[in-house]
Image (cartoon, rainbow, N blue to C red; front, top):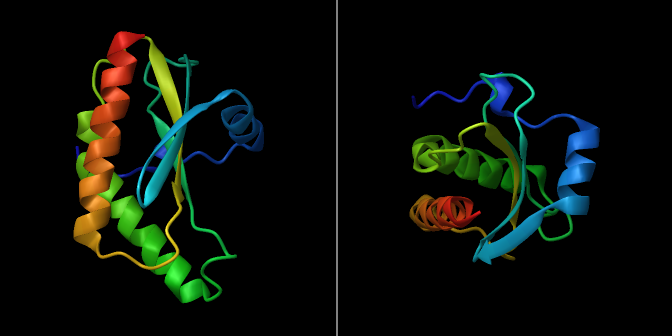
Length: 125
């Protein structure tokens, strides 16, 4: 349940382009999520995501990797909040929009809020 597998990572360029072209988004500072709902291509398809930390705000790769690891861990611990997708799947991009590093507790709380809000919007659709 708390594993994060290769199948959950969004790597396809075409799906990423579709995500930013057709996706919806909202922000919960310091994170912004862009998501796109689509029909499953296989019955066991999982929600896929990727994380982006801007090089413009964080020049050193060490800081970008530090933040990416914290965001990935927050998603791994809270991905169970996405429920009842049915025959649909979701592609997500988590974008870090703050100009400074935040601690894990802040990132984790915002990730929970984002996933709850996303789940509520999925229930309405």
